[in-house]
Length: 168
View 1 (cartoon, rainbow, N blue to C red):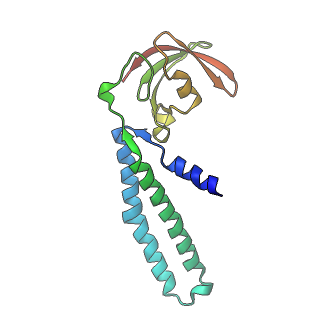
View 2: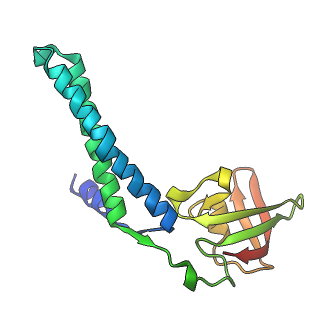
């Protein structure tokens, strides 16, 4: 049991890097949890309490369970935000692929080109072509230069991508 606690402390204390936009999104979500959802659950508990005997009150039990889950979520988000570090884009080097790089790659098999921006895990959004640096493609692109070939392991096999351009 002690090693599980140590593991959770390690995970919760890891630094995570965010863009200003990504960090603000987290702060906004935390604000919503505290100012909208927390009062709503408190109101549900009060209404259920007013209905009488708490020992057989399913509404009360459900509201208390929802409150516990919400408080855990709030606590986790507070820890994430306290361990967050902003990425200073002004000092980023475009000679290699790093986090926040916008990378144009070309599939060596079919010639298709696609542009991705590499971001932190929780800012990834494939619809916006923002991929995590922890994803197979993200990991394969990190540290590469224009003209390099990135060998990406996919479930369907290895795909080679040529780095066409790197920008911010």
